[in-house]
Image (cartoon, rainbow, N blue to C red):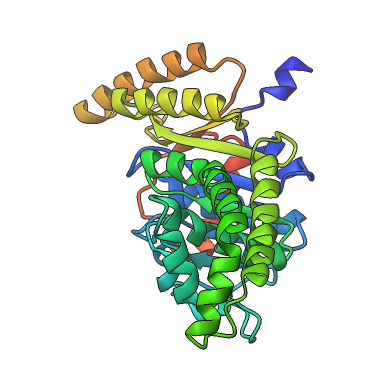
Length: 327
């Protein structure tokens, strides 16, 4: 059973039906986007509906699928149940599209929310993330795959729910003290729609969503993090840091994808450079095997062409399930 549990594939992620959030991350340039698109493609085969969100400001999923995506979930061409969207986690609330704010008299205007939040450093982009999460949760996708930005940003993104919980707690405590004053001021200025009770209801509602997301992120049945690296010193070092920080945050991680591996063909004499690269990679693969013996380690081959376009992604994605066999 132990041997099967540590199969060198992501089959465990595909088959874990309770999973709701899957994060894919690692150092820049290691193939996170390809891996997350491939994983989303495989998940779409077994789940009712899958959403892939790019939180990397470089937005490579548009390039990977050769289709332009926006801040609103869009169906990926060639699929019935795979959607994609691109958000910039560094963008504040004021830059979110209007779809994120309910259009009725009872809703708080964007500016009121932004002004209120500007008093709390770092919370603006976290709240922007909260609004996105609310939208995503409301659309009830069976599974959401995050193609995250390079490591540092990812860890900030995962700490957002805690940041917001603290910030909203402060705002709600303040609200009890300054609520009557806000109502008085609104009356004097003729702003009848600024109602402090309504505002706190909205904040309470958001707090609920955030608490739920926070709990789900820390629940191994619902969230897992797939680390992507290449067989080189810096990438391995970064992966170890990532695994330690995820453990600190209480976020489950038990899969590592080692990308861009050079497999030497039997009976063929490799060039000097290929031989050298293969030797270096073999050394780091041994280290990965020692460090992560309780992880599923997936080995992906270096391709002659870029993995771009739906067909190539579909073809390459099978290596996440069936380990690559080189002849």
